[in-house]
Every structure is written in structure tokens, then in C-alpha cells.
Image (tube, rainbow, N blue to C red):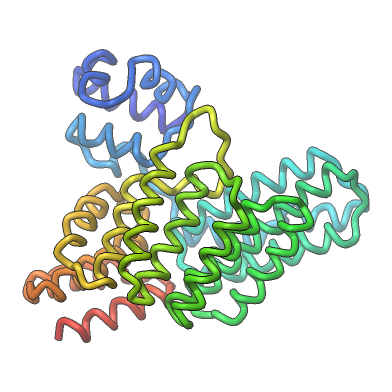
Length: 370
């Protein structure tokens, strides 16, 4: 039984609620709930939030005492990763090394959920450099080589994202494009689309939004066979770049396409691991941000408020960022007092988070609300 699953079960039993009663309060069957509680199925954030609401307990109590994310990052930084261990041990790598590396990438990606870019960037830079060195110097089969190239592509996307969060935009651009080359060589068109799409997101924020929209659309076109959730993510970047370009019609059309893609998801359709975080709340956040950009702030606030309420305290950066958008939506709708209250909460939540992106957003909205 997983620790998180066992905590869900303990909380349900402490509330005196049977599996049948829990199923009646949620959209999951008894069997699905049982799988979550026994660890047969991975527990995701939406499961924890649903349990917290059904049982009227905090999400934090269900997650348990969190580790200090900065301590975790530091421990990773001083420890030897699989790529460094290999470089000192030999030249031949096989499937087991590829599997270990893939898990390392997945764990690093989740560390980004709780650690700001300024603190995480040294670790992910090193991981990418060492993994790239293995790809260049080691011996491996064609099948293992494809897996290694995909790992390089995924690490490149992560390094680019973290670098952008830390304010290193030129570095992020170079890393994204290097990752596209790795994804292309691996034959992973969906990953290549993800890299180009993430670069378009940066361009929409700090570059030319019209160019960003063209790049985002190209990424969708190139990854035409992407599975539903991955496609929804790529389309979100089209919506955002279009909104930033003040192309309301294209933004609204892309937002509808996001909904269509996401609703077509199925348990039987495989998705890349890097879409683990995209859910209905995240889609609503992006929709709310787009509504602000195209001059419809009244439509944004309800979407943003609901999503913020669903977040737990471990995701402080996202909570703070989304509060800046909520504050902006309120300010642009003329509700300045409410906007000031929200941006003050955002600043409080952002304390101690080393993210240039977050700091800039908070300062910008504080100027807006006066």
C-alpha cells in the first residue's frame, strides 16, 4: 500500500465513511477508490482534493508532512545521478540504465512543482550535461539509443522551463532547440512539439506574441498524432499566444479545441508522462488568463478562484502565480479593493520562492492595482 493511498484510507475510515458512501460522493466507483487506497493505482492531486472535499479535511493533512523541497534539491545536487555513475563505470549502457534515467527525469520534473527555478537550475543543468555526454560517448543498442534521446529531449524541456522561470531566457531558447533535435532523432514528434510549444510560451510572454502564435500552431501541426491530453497542452499554448497577440477569435477557437481534445482522453490511450499535471483546473486557469488578455476579465475570475481553491500548499509558486492573475482579472473588472487583497496574498505566498517569473508578476500587478 502506498503511503498516500494509506492516508486516504485512514482519513476515510476516521470519518466513518464506507467505500460505498465515498463512491456516492465522488465520480469514482468503489473499485477505483479501492485501487487508490491500496496503491494499485497512482494517487494524483485531483484524487487528494476530492477526498479532502468529501471528508471535509485539509489536503495538507492527507499529503502528510512534506519534505523541504530545497533540501531535496540540494541532496540531489550533491549526489551522483545515474549518468555520472555510468561515466565513471564504463561505456556500455543497456535497458536498465535507460529505465533508471527515465525515472530520474520524472522525479526531477516533479521537483519543479515545489522548487523555484533559481534554486533548481544548477541541478537540472548538470543532469542534462551528464546525460548528453553519455549519449555522445557510450555504446548502446538502437532501442536504448532512442530512449536516451527521448530522455535528453525531456530534460531539455525541463531545463528550458526552469531557466525561463529563473529569467535566463536566451539559455532556455537554446536548450529548447537542442531538445528538438534530440526528439527528432528519437522519432518522437509529440515531444518535439512539446519543446517548440514551450518555447512559444516563453516568446508569448517576453518576445513577439505573433511569432509565438505561429510557432505554437506549427508545433500542433508537427505533432498531429499527439494523444488527447498532450494535444490539449499544445493547443493551450496556441490559445495563450493568440490571446497575447490580441487575436480574440483565434484564442477562443483554440480554447474550444483544448476542451475537445481533453474530453477525448481515455484510460486506454497512452500519454507521455510529462502531461501528468494537466487537468481541468489547469485548463481553467489558462482559459482565465486568456480571457484577461482578450478583454473579458469578468469571465476569468470564477475560473481562477475555483482552480486556486483546489491547490495544496506544496504548490506555493503556482498558487501565488494564479493569484496574480486573479488579482489582475479583478482589477481590470474595476474591483480594485478585492484585487489588492488577492495580490497581498500572492506576495505572502511567494515569500522565499526563488522564481524571477513569480517576482516579476507580483510586482507588475502591484503596480496595476496601485
